[in-house]
Image (cartoon, rainbow, N blue to C red):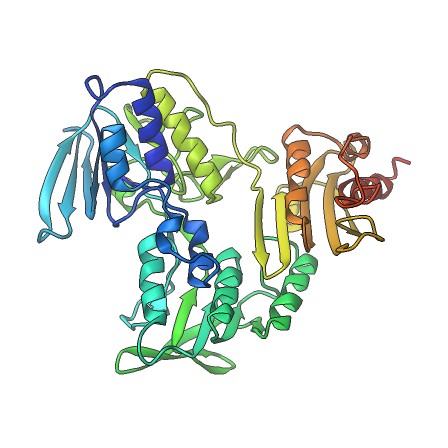
Length: 452
């Protein structure tokens, strides 16, 4: 296993469940110090909602070694793969980069993704952080404890990590500016829905600067002091990069493993690397098939990584399993505002060549008269002609985000919005209006299609 987080260790665990240590030796190389942790939980630990870092760790290296008979080697970086000799070459980072060669019959490539680092962030300036691994989170957390403590944070990029880290910095008492190149933060939803997120960020005291492109960094003795844009400079004691991620495939490319149009590794339904017998891949380093468009996509989510690793491990262990594809269901939260999406955004539906309608509704999470009723906005995309659901987005407060789940199920199963109007969803005043917001949105989409 190359990589000790979701994809790699899910594969290792599943393979071990099917084959004993006497029958199958498993070695896992991990460049960092941790295994099987929640990278998605890092902003909540940094922001103080999760008290201890180790609460994010599902299984430690010691647990894998002692309970699963998996030889986990942390702080070992794989630097080469020799497919002809069937061995990986690693260096022990804490032992003077001592070289280690390990033969394999089956190889799982699960290196994850790496944060996008623009040229201006690669200048060796301290105080600039990506947030991809728990080691990254550890370094950022330590920087916040330095003396004197940082007072001004600039978050560059307004995606999931960007908005979550902006809130974390506010919770830590810093003054925060979020710089976003696009018209709105949260490009993972349509601009009209992203505007709701921007309003919430501003209400928290976060300065949101949209339509700005960062051109460089200022520093004082090698420590970051400012973020430069064409419109001026922004003071900063810490900079967090939220510019997205890309598949970590440099090692795969060097080894000659095939990459797809998204930059991820090409795999078949069983997670076998195409054209490389005995080599498997899982997690954020691979590309998947989108079930709506049928096209390859790179959508990095822990849910996908765990499922893909499980599939690879079952197959390695002698079973049979396939990975059916993705639809990109994701949720996040900004303070009490919940954001969710599944399927295609409007721009994605256009790029895929769909003719479609959109329908947006405002409703409440509970019966309007019930205490705690809060507003939410639901937006659906439906294909003209067929009425098939193509995508959905939700922005609202308490209990809004998880309403994306019935929409994801409907989309997964190629339901039409007309079918959805009749869904038998749960109702009681503390939980929903008599017409759930999902059903109201489906009705409005039916009307937009001119079906009734």
